[in-house]
Image 1 (cartoon, one colour):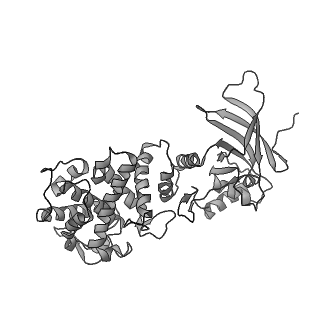
Image 2 (cartoon, one colour; image 1 turned 30 degrees about the vertical axis):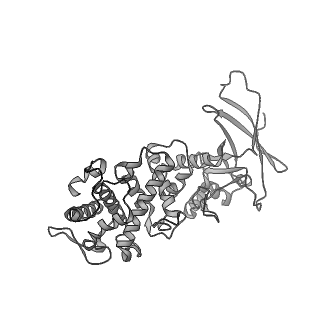
Image 3 (cartoon, rainbow, N blue to C red; image 1 turned 120 degrees about the vertical axis):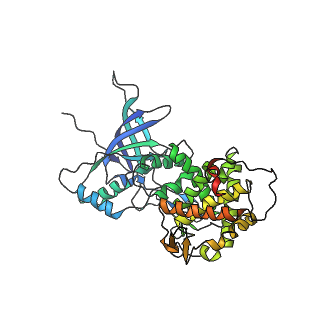
Length: 401
């Protein structure tokens, strides 16, 4: 009986029996099995972080200790089985040496040997492979009190951008932290599922708003790598997505990418600079002490931004123009104290507004309603076009503006 082929170590090189599978034009996958305790010698985990220059590196979330412990206990149990493959991306340091294809074997599959260089555990050099999916399983096997635990592995050759894209696609249906997906989306370029495609444009703008020193939102948005920002990234993303869909930012949809993002950046900066100017106390407090910085406040103010731009019939209102209209409703807002007077006996304490769809709608309707009542009294330059064309979300709120 022939001996079962196993991975052999020759010096600092692994020679692993593998199967090459051709998928589409120029796409090849490599499937093999290897002891999970050996994997760290050639595959690293690129955890997401900001380098000294503030640029984003990596894409993996941090290890989840409780999850790893559960998997480790399972691995140490009798009859443990992990059928899911570890997915990793290869650098050119790894090479595949094909064998002879047996007669009758399909053209899209062939066997061979993967030649994989390894590094000592204390080496600071980059590993020739990076884990795209399965870091928690690998961490569990690494620490498990078992002699060995072979794992199924699927690898592919890819540059850094493709690794990030595959990571998102593999994990978008799993409970990854949404803030992590939002933050690494701008580092991708290929076509994503429709929902992620829409969110990517908003995520790119969010990154610029949160990192550009000229932005009033700089450092204020809480992301996976900026845990101290007072405003949740999901709140700003929803504001941006709504406005891009059919609000003030929809105006720039036909421009080239660089121009479109610049104009959108300018509009959002002008609006929030005005918000900061009109509501300085509420702007300086955390969400628990200011409903302006709360998810409900941010999202409702997004609709107000669209309404002001629409009423003025301007694609790019200035900070002064936004501020003039915001001051008209300043005394109607109870961001940090008092009561919201919603009418018909519906009075709510300032901090009773929650980040729910019902409360967001209630606050939005109130702000737009108050704006409607005093909009006609606000003095501003005449509309150069002499008329207002309502479209998209502005049309939905036409009765309010």
